[in-house]
Length: 186
Image (cartoon, rainbow, N blue to C red; front, side, top):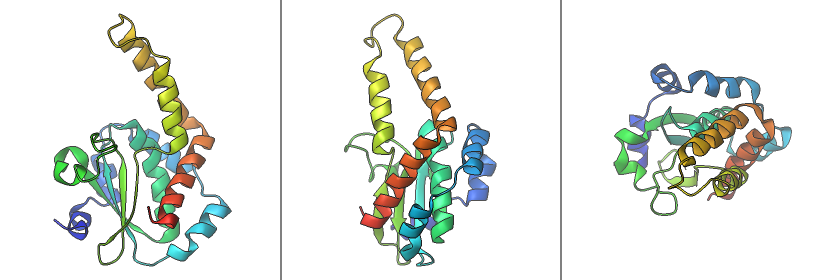
């Protein structure tokens, strides 16, 4: 299938939110509290109403999607981009074309396409600064075979999830990173 076909197959925002079983309130909480900066709005001006579309490879259970999707939605609104959601686990054919580091089915992945369906930029699954936070947290975990590994790992993920929901600096890192990808076409 071509990218435009995937876009047309995707769920609307209303359909995606309606089908969410987890992270819905958390995602919408970020959406309600996040605003683009004037600088980001100015950087997006040249893309406003150009017919650019976004395919979002995602799942509701994903903490990174909970953080990134509402920020993408604000960017898409500002630039007049249509957004469609493709559930990763049901669409591995597309997901496997956008593996992180060539091996990982990490999400979310945002595929920006023009009106004709040509790929213009790809972003995901995390902003560089957020990846550094995750890497730092993982580096402090005990060895995987340690008795307390699972407990410490879950504790780290709970702290990350809480910071994703509350730390507006993280939201800005994500917004800047997505806008950079759109503007640079990477």
